[in-house]
Image 1 (cartoon, helix red, strand yellow):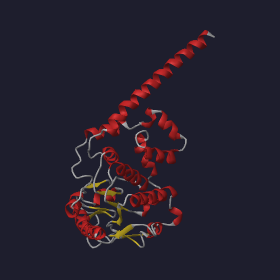
Image 2 (cartoon, one colour; image 1 turned 45 degrees about the vertical axis):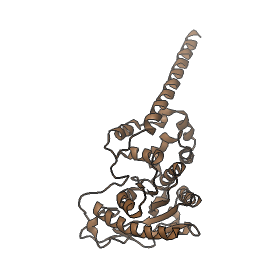
Image 3 (cartoon, rainbow, N blue to C red; image 1 turned 135 degrees about the vertical axis):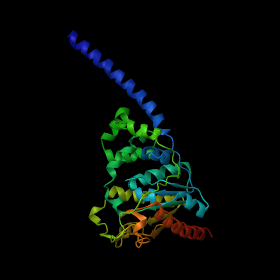
Image 4 (cartoon, rainbow, N blue to C red; image 1 turned 180 degrees about the vertical axis):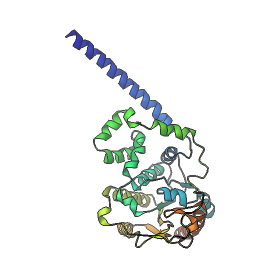
Length: 306
């Protein structure tokens, strides 16, 4: 009996020490994580988008957004501050979380959403684990994580070590990476492998491929823009890929809403040398596209203000 009490005593002491360590660990990590410098690390980029970005024009999307929209060109053309919040491999849930966070600090005038209907399939949801460190500091991300994680959400919120599981290396890279030089724009350099090849042909998305949660967050993003009187442009940027009615499903969701659709998917089909691969422009192509886009947005936005 004495041995049992002794074991119970040590187990209790161990549990108390573990809880104290977890609390201290969370306290330190929260401050280090939420105060990461603005560097080119993908982890640091997310922290910048969620906690720091304040600009008149916000660009949202995945890698195509990050590589296709040159912030400096948009700034010079529109006469407004611009930040590119595109992130490799992310989806509409991520875009919605970023916009919700930005609006809490400062309401932008324009949002450009680089849209691929593949975002609606939900294939990128597993990549959203990078948002788990924010479930205590960002109420909207807490809602998203609860939607995605179910019962394990409560364990994430309760245990700081679990919440930051395998994130230490990501944070280390964020602190040691080079500073962010282009306000979120990430130029792709090198040469194209598409010269001499014909564009690929793809089929549009099917209703059975659509993820309801992705659709819900796209609609929430649109409603956030409407509520805050933000002009939303949903853009299909250039690709070396032909998809008939590529935006048909998205347009069906936006009937009666204040959204402007802009299809530039075939803008550079005659210039394969401007693409790194079928889905991504090289820096030269991004500059050509951004100049074209900026001139049209300036006309539309100035027209709406008259």
